[in-house]
Length: 193
Length: 220
Image (cartoon, rainbow over all chains, first blue to last red; front, top):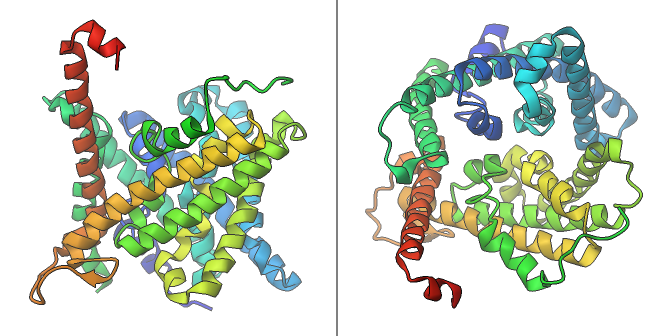
C-alpha cells in the first residue's frame, strides 16, 4: 500500500510529471485540438472526466482480476472499460448538451485512443494507490492535461497572427512550442525536492 | 461489401513502399506520436519499440483482414482494439522474457502500443477493406516506416545527448553530451528539426516541379 499524501500526488501529476509535457501521453489531441482556446478547454474537461471515471473502474477491475488470479487479462480488460466509458460519456453529453457534443466532434470518440487514459490506469496499478489516491491522481493528471492544452492553444492563437516562415508552418511549429513548454515545466522538478 | 476495392495497379511493392515513404506514419501522417517521442532517447530503445509495434501491426492487420466479413459494423472499433490488445499482451510478455533491462527502459510504453492511433488507423483504413496478403504487406511497410522514423530521432538524440550510437561511444572520452537532448524537450526539438528538414525538401521539390517544363514532369 502506497502512503503518498494526496496533495503530493496531485501536484506531482499536474506539474512535475505533467502527462503531456514530461511523460508524452496524449500527444495526438495535444497537437490536434490545440488550435482554439475554447475547444482546448472543453476537450480538457471531457478528458478529465473520462480519466476520473476510468480510473475508478480500473481500480475495481484490478481488484477483481487479482482475486481471480487473471492479471494477464489486465490490458484487455482496461481498454474494454475505457472504450465503454467513452461511449457512455458520448451518449451522456449528446443527451444533456448537444452544443458541446457538436463542438467536440470527432475528438470525443478518439478519447478512447488517448494514451493518457490507459497510461493512468496502468501507472496507478503499478504504484499500488488506494481508491482515494487513484481519484486524486486522475484529477491531477486531468488538470495537467488541461493546463498543457490551454497553454498551447493560447500560444498557437497568438502565433497564428505572427509572421512564421513557410517551412515552419503547422506541425513543426507546434512541436517547437511544445519543446519550449516542456523546458519550462522542467522548472517544476524542483518542487519534488 | 462484396468486392475488395483494390486497384489492379497497386502491387504488393507499392503497398510496402507507401508506408515507408509516401504515407510514412510519423513524418507524413503524424500519427502515433507518443511512443515516437517517449522512447526515442537511444537508438536501441527506438529500434526495439519499432520492431514491437511492427509485430503488433502485422498481426492485427492479418487478423482484422481475415475476419473482415464477420465483424459487425457497429462494434468494429471495439473488436479491433481487443484484437490489438491481444497481440500487445503477447509482445509485453515476450520482451519481459527476452530482456528485463529493455522492458524497464520501455516501461509502460509497450502496453501503450494498444492505443497507438496509427495501428487502429491501419485496421480501419486498410485491413478492414483488403485481403490478408496486402494487409500483411501494408503492416510491414507501415512498420518499417515507423522503425526508420524512430531510428532517425533516437539516433540524433543518442549521438547529441550521450555521444554514442547503439551504446558504442563515437567521440573521445571527454565528450560532454547535451543533457537537453535526453530530456523530454529533446524529443520535441528533434522531431521538429526533422519536420523542418522534410518541409524544406518538399518545398524545394515543389518549386522545381513548378519551374520545370511540362514535358519533363510528364516523362519522369
